[in-house]
Image (cartoon, rainbow, N blue to C red):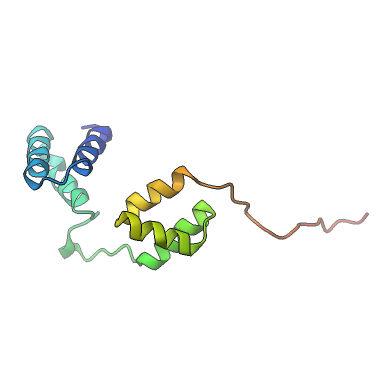
Length: 117
């Protein structure tokens, strides 16, 4: 299975609000993928990397993710939070913000060499 096929599934799901249609997309997709990856696809579709019983937590709070997105886009935290409220999903907000990304410098301080003149 190619990852692009999973991306296509997620795009199809994201393009509809009809529960039966979403269910049909997922059922059709699961029927055609190898059994050895079904568990991984189900977890990803639930927005997880591991099952809950595995006890693996990524440990990234939403506020930390928003700060990282602010730094990555060069936008203020307030603008990032506003976009999250508008989109309702941090992934969708990130996608939208990254399309309009500003150039970000690594350091705002001027750097001077330490050598002798």
